[in-house]
Image (cartoon, rainbow, N blue to C red; front, side, top):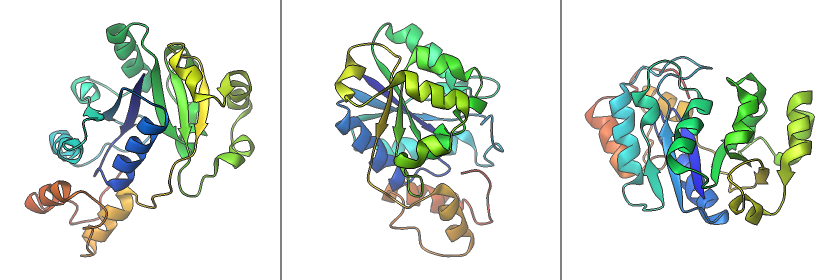
Length: 219
């Protein structure tokens, strides 16, 4: 099974890396693809050069064979729609199980995503617990269409995800890591240390390029 872990990674931090590693191990994935977003459909485009974001991500995962950077969204023109990424991967990988990993805070807005109903046909959806969004309260926050998706597709046995290419929703708790890219950017703008928030190689790229010295945009 191949995992897909997307984001703007502006910048990538330990929350991203440790969550991706934990999900990969918990679900016995062959690899977790880290997919940097090119043009986010639901937020402002990052004001950091995509190639610098890619360089930070490559440096962050360089010591982890279980994580692999996939830059197809940076190469694709137009908004980075997840459904297009999954279709591209499905065309390449055939019937290998794919698992789209999203946080609870993203999942509750899944019905606003481009062609969102097609996502479950292309991949399993793994909903990871994130700080402040306990999975137990998920059903109280989602729309009726999403609630129906949960009712129709949710499973609790992660082994089922390995038996079919797509079609299941799985709730997976992960360790709380209260770090966000926006917090990091604000810390830098205020002259505070972020040494414990990002891998050393990422910190070096940030310092070398004088990134985020003013309050930046986009998580």
